[in-house]
Amino acid sequence: MRHLVVVLGDQLDERSAAFDGFDPSHDRVWMAEVPAESTHVWSHQARIALFLAAMRHFARSLEARGISVLYRSLEDVPPDADLGSELAIALREHRPERVILTEPGEHRVEVVLQDTARRAGVPLEVRDDRHFFCSRERFARHRRGRKQLRLEYFYREMRREHGVLLDDGAPVGGAWNYDAENRKAFPRSGPGEVPRPLAFPPDPITRDVLDLVARRFGSHPGSLEAFDWPVTPADAEHALEDFLRNRLPSFGDTQDAMWTDEPVLYHSRLSAALNLKLLDPRDVVSRAEREYRAGRAPLAAVEGFIRQILGWREFVRGVYWSFMPEYLERNALDAREPLPGFYWTANTDLNCLHQTLAQTLATGYAHHIQRLMVTGLFALLLGVDPREVHRWYLAIYVDAVEWVELPNTLGMSQFGDGGVLASKPYIASGKYVDRMSDYCRGCRYDPSRATGERACPLTTLYWDFLARHRARFASHPRLRMQIRNLERKTPREVEDIRRAAERLRSGWRAESTDEAAPSANRGEPGA
Ligand code: FAD
Ligand code: SF4
Image (cartoon, rainbow, N blue to C red; front, side, top):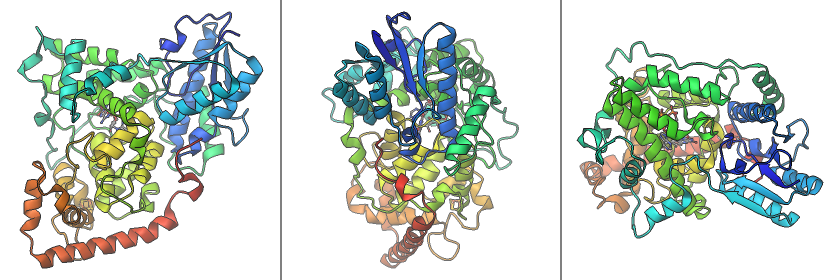
């Protein structure tokens, strides 16, 4: 055998660099379903199923084109198999001249595969991941000479470099960013009729996987009942088309709004298909732009959507590869609390958390503001150790791959990186949730109260967060106002808030040991 081409579960693209020069008569593809990738964090059952179903479909499509795939399925491998142990066996059996790999989406995996190849004495060639607009090397150039990274400058560079939403080199419409127009809430009557995203009922291959996951990982969080994710490029193409036609025109306005029993609203629900490489982001971006040029979607919606993909998605990847592996250890706010056990069960009377968590467990999906301003906000205000928060996010969302999950969680939502990704912590009281959703209407707490029987825990913890971190943020230009509001409170009020916050913390601390994920699955990621 000449080349053994390793294809990981989030590399399901026949046009990836690993296939350059592929010769079916001398080369083989190697893919493996290993239990360790589903258990190193306590993965949602739908996340496991999505990866396996998409991998099996991809292997079939390669074989249909005459490419021979050495495929190790979960049923073939020992219960303690991991990527390293399985690859080592393949290298011993087949003795390829070289192993070819596209850059993985997780630092840990890159290290494991490099070590395995080195120990087997087989050269490993890691090729650039061309899926992304911005290579690791290009991001390093962007970083050079900058004291601080900011999305906006990076995003403008990407727009210019890739000729996106430009007229004669200037931003279409005269502005680079229409974010200010994307923060509206729904009226009290709610969002009205929202076009439902296309569902993809499981075919026989996916049904086999669902049965397998139920058998092998039935004790994992989440449910498989609602599983309707696209698992092939053709499905993903339909999902994209459906979004562009039916939801993109309304994507912008209410991007930050939330509503009970409306998990998707006008979001695209394309992250998993993008992250598994079933969709090409260049295609997604150019077709979104086409909707604007054809007059079918307004500029604010199209720019807002493109900014997420050409801007944020590329930016967080750049941050990940720039700061790993030490990024994982960052804890700028010295947060040490355990994650409350109800994150795994949705069993809480805080309605915003209950709604977001119940939806997450049912589907493996929540939109950005639910992740950032409900589950993320609560963990930040409570002071949960960012590594625990990271493990939960990596486990629970179907689109979770570490390069995108970690900077969003540890950086954007927990401010654990001390300001690399976001210039300030995203903090708010329960009043924000009240403004942006209908959750508070169905809640026993009152978002405007910080103390007393009906005090909203988010509001209590918000003031407590400001009091705890006052010295650090007092001179921060974007938090000064919030600190000033805290200073308007009497010392007695602040003391009452701090006591109430401590009572909340000790309650959840006790609960986290009863309800949390099994301790065996709560260790550091590592196969
Ligand atoms: P839309 O709102 O329709 O956005 C369009 C696309 O833009 C998404 O599909 C996604 O590819 C991209 N995008 C949007 N926001 C971001 C962002 N902040 N970073 C990177 N890409 C973005 N996204 C993941 O893909 N995987 C994760 O594991 C993940 N973890 C997150 C954890 C936290 C704490 C937070 C705050 C955000 C996380 N995100 C993650 C980003 C974002 O929430 C999801 O990409 C988005 O909610 C997916 O839903 P959608 O496809 O409907 O997105
Ligand atoms: Fe969440 Fe507080 Fe609103 Fe209840 S009152 S839904 S806890 S923000």
